Image 1 (cartoon, rainbow over the protein chains, first blue to last red):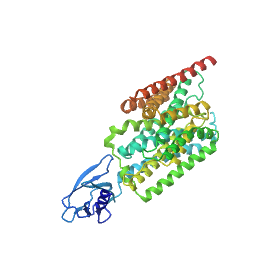
Image 2: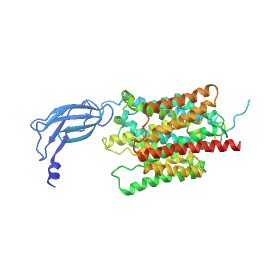
Image 3: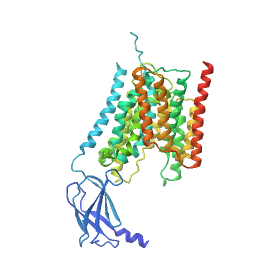
Image 4: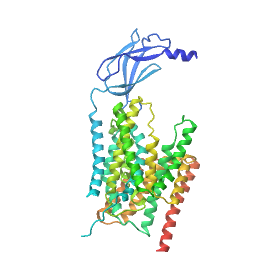
Length: 122
Length: 355
């Protein structure tokens, strides 16, 4: 019970919803809810997927804060010591490659289907 | 010039059936593959389907529909066994509940997996209902995906990563080669109506479209749950797809019993062998069926079916799941292979006697 209460105060929070290319402030608090200074904060982009990338954001100041400008969009995991915060970074632009592949797959699927159905209709 | 017979719409029952088989494979494989490299495996599978799967299935489809003796019987038996193995292993793997699931949902998953076979047998006699189910399946999946994507754009999971091609290429190639039903569909269906030889195009097209829809929805679920959400497909979609696949195998009592037994085994004692059956035995069965089709074909059809068989064999050799190491599962796989040989040989001998 005591362990649960102490963990309940520990937190990693952001002052605003993260957007790629826009600076946000990360605030880290310890088990007692006090600012956790001197903590190294890291971010893992695309956790558990291909192309995952881990970057150091910085070390928290005396108020438990560190500034961060997300370089990538998408799902990421912020780590500060044992504390973890999963978040979604709004991408600056729509991903052209992913969209192109999606459009190509849709056109191919519908094109093949249309070819077969068109033949049946004649 | 001979007139091409006008196909009836109910003849298209062979299309949802074949599509069911192919989509089962896509659904069973895409969740893992999306995690490995985003949309890259699906794109590779689509290319292989267009340039290998469809021509091979088309060549097989153009062949004689009834071959009562010899190589034809062996071919048909191999295709049926491969289709049965595909459906049973995909059903079993999709019905596996998560480790922390409550007992009620576990029993529900088992009931769903076993119910697929009688449902498929019933639908095999009602083609209009089957077509309606397929249309509802695609429409429902499309609405579900559109809703999910409008709530959360699915870009993170779907981002293509072709640089890790060694990890996904063999499985994606198998997926593409089988997406049009090559080695499985045309021979597993009960009838091959004349004038339907473009069915493989429809099968592959529908498979790619449904796989894209499912990938979109999976990406949206993953993104909205910040990578922690379950990628399990909705039970309704899975069961409808499986029913369509079961329907392709027809309403024969022997297939119904064999399918039920195989699914039960893969859900229980043979759980560790499901990957081997799905990734290795099924493509090899389809490759053998295509190789025999090449043997009996002429001209370009011979080359297309041989290409399909060669691509499947190479993909399995490069990345097939090895056989299970546990003694019990190894013995069961051995018995399965002996049983398959017995089925094929018995049919061939009986056909030769009655010819």
